[in-house]
Amino acid sequence: MAMLEPVHPLTPKSWYLPSKPHKFCPGCGHGIVLKALGENIDELGIQDKTIFGCDIGCSLLAWNFFACDSTQTHHGRTTPVMVGIKRSRPELITVGYMGDGGGYSIGSQHLLNAAVRNEKVTLILVNNTNYGMTGGQMAPTTLPGQKTETSPYGRDPEQTGYPTKGPEFIAQLTPDSAYVARATVSKYNQLKRFIRNALRNQIEGNGFSFVEVLSTCPTNWRTNAQQTWRFLEDEMEPYFPVGELKSPFGKGDK
Amino acid sequence: MEKVFSEAKKAFMTGNETAAWAALAAGAEVMFGYPITPQNEIMHYWTRMAPKYDRGFLQTEDEISAGFTVCGSVQSGKKAFTATAGPGNVLMQEPFGMAEGMRLPLLAIIQQRGGPSSGTVVYSQQEVTLTTFGGNGEGHRIVYSTATHQEIYDYIIKGFNTAWTYRFPTFILGDGYQAKMREPLELYSPEDKGIKMVEPYPLIGLPGHIGEDREPKHLCNIYSLEEELYEVVMKISAEYEAISPELTEYQERECDDAEIIIVSHGVVSRAADDAVTALRAQGLKVGCFRPITLRPFPAQELKNCIQKSGAKKLLIAESAYGQLFRLVRQEIYGETVPMETLFMPGVGIIDYDIMSKIKSML
Image 1 (tube, helix red, strand yellow):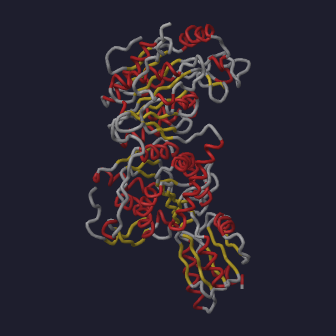
Image 2: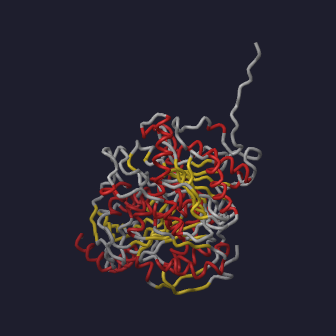
Image 3: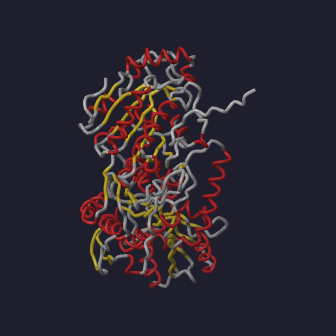
């Protein structure tokens, strides 16, 4: 009987292997986002000068995901920490990683003002339409009618407003040198390209770079694989259009 | 870094201007701040001088952001600072907590204003509890309470060295009077006084190729297990307690035979000092004790003072309703000397106020 060689999945060089397998739930989209980020860090050759900053929330589980220097922050405060680092050490590539709660709710004024000032940082915001880490509460991005722990009868826009469309408002606040896009974990190549552009925009010293990524949360959505993908593609993507809203690299990819 | 003063020089200026010059002379590289009275002129002077000395500044969207940008900046190895007051100090407790938990050498200048709430923009000593024990931690901070403009200058220079030597968040606790009044002082470059400034160093963004020359640096402030956090807090506590004896500073005067010892801090200690002079001239045995560091508190030194004098009473005088009083009581637990109080929250205290109180205690 032939000996079977163990098969190791291909992993980006910039992944920190002692922290693998990662700690995200089965079916969570974070791993896909972080793979796209890792491959880009490798291909751009920026592993040694990347500072990865983690918000509180599920994004925190990525705190030692990369073989890059990293720091944990507080809920909503990753943006100012990244701004402080970038302004102090412009040669570093600062990547802030946060969820929709951290970016659009508790950290919204940091996000808004960093965008207005065109801070030369890259922020990646994972939108899974709920607060995952704390047990599935309503988020700024929860869809109308969507049930969460704090909207158990479905989100009522009359009472709680409509979902925050982050890239749309950030695109309005930023000059042409900013990069603003929305990606989805269902389109990997596009996601990877958008994150690459967001990093490149910082590397070139152009301005603020922001990518929202539509992602999945089967644990809190209480969905099976088929339902999870259906919610992402059929509910979220029509509400949150995917594409580049602002790019210094030519015509946006819609 | 360029020397700011080629030789020591006399000046007559406000405390806020003094603070900006001190930060410059101490080699501070960047300030992050948000406007709030009575600290505004620290930013005003800093923004005028910073470009001439190749230093940085950012006016952030609020005090939370100012505190966290300082956290990021010191993590990346820059000597960064901020200044605030009152409700701004409340908002900054969150980043100050991060600095405590991650041992970040953050320096903040606090110019106390009246409280609670928006209070007044004028003056108080009501941010003692907040500055010493604010946040969701254990008060692992170093707090210098200054009394004169010369001290603002000296302790800002010292404070940067304290922060970067021990890596505990460090505070220069002033007040609206010290911020706004003018006073003579001497400005100097630290090296001319034999003070060697501690060089800042990065905690992340380190040199070398990851995986070849070094491991990645992952900074952490949240823990999965009770036991992990316990280990961290116990280690921080032990280190804080170990360095406390070399950090505590105080002043005492005429305490050897004092029957009453006035305990006060900051600008009020000047009124106490004047009161002691006047009361001694009247033949009354009164002395005064002033903690310069409120954290760590010079507890043993105050106990020694009480014991050697055999004082019959202490008078705690402060422009707050018992914030110093609570600190003193907890720190000298076990002493049985009776304490009286002069609480004037948000209001200035002059020698006459203290003398009247002392005479009522005789």
